[in-house]
Amino acid sequence: MSTTKSPYFLTDRQKQVLRFIVHEITSRGLPPSLREIADHLGTTSFQGAAVHLLALEKKGYIEKSPVARGLRVLRVPKSEKIGKTISIPLLGEIQAGVPIFSEQNIEKYLSIPSQYLQGATEAFLLRVRGDSMIEAGINEGDLAIISSQPTAKNGDIVAALVGQEVTLKKFHQIDQYVALIPANPKYKPIIGREFLIQGRCIGLLKNKEANNFRGMNNRNLLPIYSLPKGKSTKRVKIKP
Image (cartoon, rainbow, N blue to C red; front, side, top):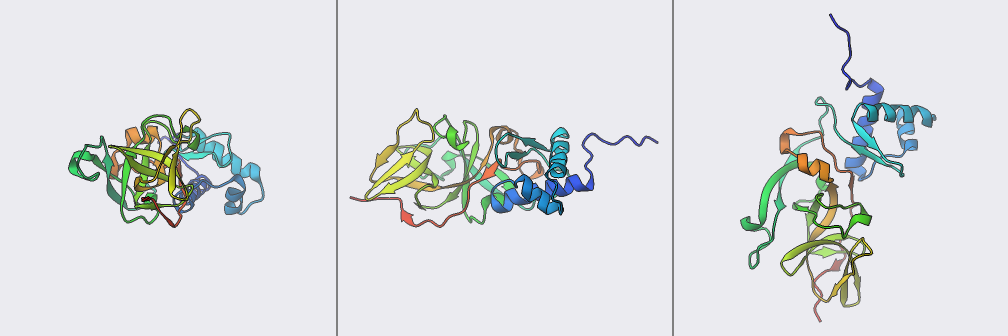
């Protein structure tokens, strides 16, 4: 009888580290630091924590990047449960003269882990088009997770209806004016007195995940990051 282990086999310590990374992303909205991983393991050795991360990366469970908290979960073992799922609409092309959530505007529904919604009771997905938000880590083809709400506060990334197009921009209000600010110096802010805000971006499914997302039966995907919660304090629709 062969005792060869699968190349995807995880030791108990590696499972512990992976569970901790998943927990931190889904509960806090960002991956843990090396120090936090070491603390979770009950050790003062950063090198020991780094060894476990290297093993997880080699086995295809995570991807590391040379930035602070640069951890991305690529998949989890089938035996690991991420949690309940919830079905939310993915908006496609916005049709003129009909409500944004009418059936004509909904491309399909996707079931995603409920943790991604950070407690939001109503949400939808918006496929990112263009490169206006690349400096915020939001790229073409990503799926933005939007918490439906008509209000925002300065600094929020919002989905705003401009004409017949929903655009993803950073919100900033000064007196009676609202600016929708891109995260790319190639583009100028959109400034006006009245915008219809459809919701606040609370998370992101990166392009690779978005293209392969298969709903309830796929438990291998996590957002590369989630945006922090924040109470909305300013009305977005500004009247002269």
